[in-house]
Length: 502
Image (cartoon, rainbow, N blue to C red; front, top):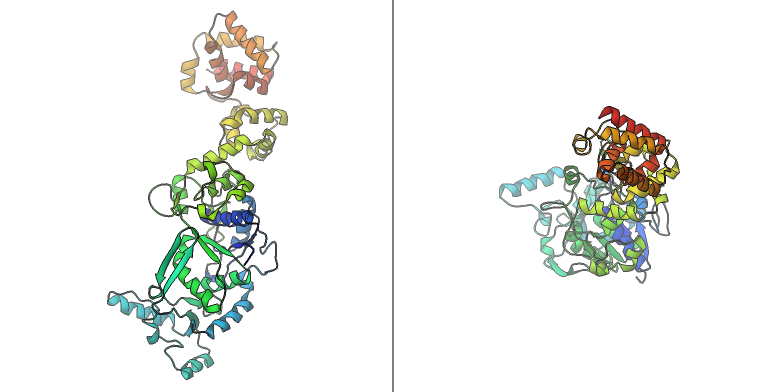
C-alpha cells in the first residue's frame, strides 16, 4: 500500500461524541499531512441499535467542523458503497472464503443454551468463554460430525460464524502510538464473525472493508485495543496485508477518573456533542457546541490538542496548519483531560481574531438582534467595543444589552456608590449641554472633562452617575463611546429617566 488511506467509520447509533470528532480529525490531519485520502464509512450492521437521523447528523457535524471526506456515502468514490448495509454481497463472498480455512467454524448454539452454560460456570465461581477450552463441548461444526452439521443446515437451523482462535500462540502486536506489545491467544475467545441474520459483526466487516478500500492506517479509540489480536489473525486468515494501527487514548472527564460522558457535560454545563441532537424516540435534545455558540475553527483547535502537541507548544492553529504539523508519533499515550475553561478560552481567542464585519454577520443571526432597528453602522461599532470582552457572539448582546434596551432598574450598589444629593443637578446641567455637543467620542471626552472642571468636580463625580444613567450599572465600554452609539436624543432621555427614578 503505497498511498496513505485512512477511514473514519462511525456507527449511526446516536450523536457523534467529542471522542469520535477527535478520531475523525486525527484521521483527516494524518491523511492531509501525508498527501493521502480520508474516507468516511458508515458501519450500520448493528441494526438493533440503529438510530434514525444519526447518519445525517454525523455527516453534518463533520462538515460543520471542516472535516470534509474525500470519499463517503455523500461524496461517492471508487470503493463505493460506503455503507456496510449495502455491502452484503461482498461480505457473503468472504464468509465463504474464511469458512474454507481452519480459522472459522459455524456454531448452532441458541441464546438459551449459552445462557444455561454461563449459569453453570457462575455456580462454580467461573467465567464462561467460548474458546479452545469449551468449543468442543458446544454445538458447532468442530464438535459435531459432518452429517450432524449438514442435517442442521438442511433444517435451516440458525447459526453464527465464529473465529477459531489458535491455541497458545503469542502474537506480537504493533501500535504507532503505544509501541510493541504481545498477547497470548489463550486469553482471547472465539468471537462471532457473522450473526445469524447473515450480517457480519464489526470485527469481520471492518477488516473486509479496510482491505477492499485499501486502507493503509487504522486510527481508532483505545477501546478497540483488546480486539487488535483478533484483527491481526483475521488478516492472516484471509492472506491479506495488514494496515498499520494507532489507538488513541481516552478523553477524560474534567474531574476524577474515567472517560468523558454526556453525564459529565450535564453536570459541569458543557456539551459533549458537536451539534444539538434530538433523540427520535424520547424527544429530548442534547446540547451541541454549534448551538452553544462555539466557532467551528475554535472547537476543532480545542479538540486537536486533546492528546496531541504541535511544535513549540503552539496553541492557536488553523486546520491547514495542524495538517502541516500533524504526526501520529507525537500523539500522547496518556488520556487527555477535558477542560470547559480551556474550550471557552479557545472560542474567546478565535472570536477576538475575527474581523468585526464577520462577527457582525454572526451577531445579526441572533434572535434578539433580528428585529433590532439599530443600523449596521452602529452594530459594527458595538462589535468593535464589545468583542474583546466576549467569549461567545451572544455575549456581545448580553454584555451590551444596554445598547438595545433602556435601563428599567438601577444596580443598588452602584447607586450608593455613584449617586448623592447633588447628582441630579449635575446630570441635569450636563444633559442641557449635551444637546449642543458633537457626538464624536474624542470630542465628547473633552467636553465632559471641561464640564467637570467648570463645576469644580472630579471626573468620577460626573462619569460614574452618567454611566449609571446610560447603562443601569457601572459597567461597559468608555462612556463617550456609549454616548456616540446611543445618540443625543436617546442619551438625554436616559439621563432624565435616571434623574426621575433614582
